Image (tube, helix red, strand yellow):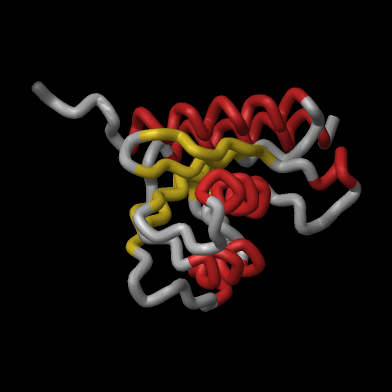
Length: 147
C-alpha cells in the first residue's frame, strides 16, 4: 500500500495554518513540523497579534517542536512551510539542525535563497510543493490589503 503521508499531504496542513493567519489579518504563512509522519508542531504568522516581528510561522513551529521533543535540535524532523523562509527563519532553522525543509512558494525578495543565507549542511530542501496554492493565497491577501 502506498504511503499516504506525501509532501502534498503535509503541505495541505501548512496551507490550513496559512488560511488561519489570513483570517486573522496576518500575512498568510503556515508551517508544520513532522517527525516519523506525525505532526508535532503547527503554527502560522502571529506578528500582528503579538506585535512581534520575530513571530513568523517557522519561528513559532521551531519553538513548539523543541518543546514537544524536549530539546533544541530538530534532527529527523521536516518543516513544511507555505512560503520560502526568510533569512531570520533560515538562521533559526540552521541552529535547530532540522533535517529537511519543504516549502511552497518562493519569496523572490526576502527568501533565504535570494539573500544567500546558508542552512545547516545536513539540511535538505524541497521547493515548489503546492507553490501555486501558496502563492494564490498570498496574492489574495495582498489584494484585500490594497483595496
